[in-house]
Amino acid sequence: TQLLEQSPQFLSIQEGENLTVYCNSSSVFSSLQWYRQEPGEGPVLLVTVVTGGEVKKLKRLTFQFGDARKDSSLHITAAQPGDTGLYLCAGTLIQGAQKLVFGQGTRLTINP
Amino acid sequence: DTGVSQNPRHKITKRGQNVTFRCDPISEHNRLYWYRQTLGQGPEFLTYFQNEAQLEKSRLLSDRFSAERPKGSFSTLEIQRTEQGDSAMYLCASSPVQGITEAFFGQGTRLTVV
Image (cartoon, rainbow over the protein chains, first blue to last red):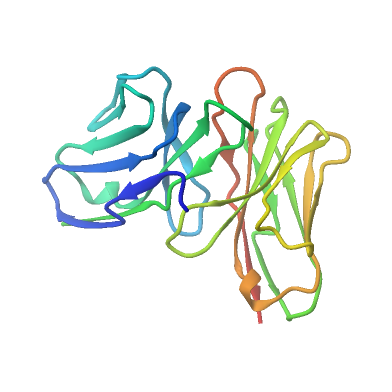
């Protein structure tokens, strides 16, 4: 079973549209991170959220951590072709080992 | 360059051969992680170290896989008697012990077993 479930797994939209990607779990996390990965490269850290209810903005990207620290969302406004990539959420459980676990990813394609 | 470095970037090997990958983490980071990623999927946790101590190893990991971090700096991941199902991207990441766990990844080693 996947500890972090991402949805949708695939998303293809037109340039200029808005989109939201979700990352859900039944477990509580001490922090959640969002990464973006290009083909053939390692994931690159975009943001970390730590406090329940926290909202962080990175240009056109808005990240939110759920109040109960079990879920997170990534919202992209006015998507551009350069946003195309694999978006991964990852987190560290509040109890237990300090390993970082990943969701299965959302493959995003922005069409010109 | 002070990022995470992985070598080699690509490795093609015949089934049954042994392979070894190396990871050099960011120098001040005490934690080092190994992940495996197949096409279109998220990284799957393999093992992690804090300094030279291996703190956790995935139960899904075959006995053919072994990792070391002898001096708490670089790490190696060895796969013995490779199988075609081992073909994947092997990712290494490092993070500091203090504070929240933010992992910084290398570019990965792409393994193809033929």
